[in-house]
Image 1 (tube, rainbow, N blue to C red):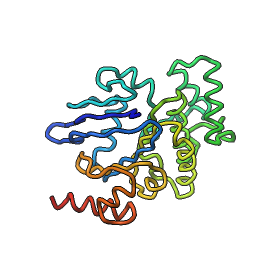
Image 2: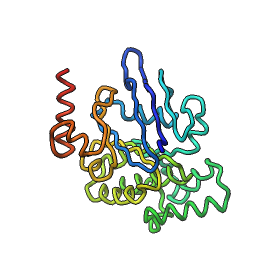
Image 3: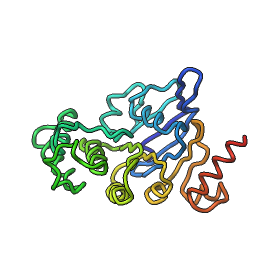
Image 4: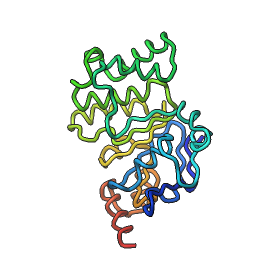
Length: 243
């Protein structure tokens, strides 16, 4: 079953087309990676799918609900961890989680159980009473993702989740993301080719707002004639540059 569908989804800013007639479908429980250089349209796509930005034209649907006409229904089944880590710095880890749970209207019992569950899932027991502003970048990213998950969304958007993290922190976060595979649909944007290679079920390469290649790693390697995601990405990007 496809939980995400887009039909000629387009976003323009004046004369600039950020996303150009995007058509894609994502299966329930799939981890789908969107790759592309800065300005390729990845974040704009996520903003439209999460109802943070309206499309210029075209349509998108999540869990059968229109992102244009049924934004409340879409927001109720989605969570987003944005590129810029979004946590309340003066609140503790636990308070951040409880605050988001309250926004989603969870009752007191559910707030406690979901907060406890997120703290266990992300191994934050030692930091749960620590103010967010004193956490390292890796711990803040973990908290941001936990906050996006607390409402039990069907779809989770991770926009550059490991941007700026050191190698160890990145690998630790990979393990957590991998543990969610199959339980929730994840849309991941990243510049790290090894990250997409390690985590994704399918990959789409965006160039100038368009999908230039999409499929499993093996499928897009076949399209490019190259081995390895980095080589594949460079080859497809070069082909498009020459057009």
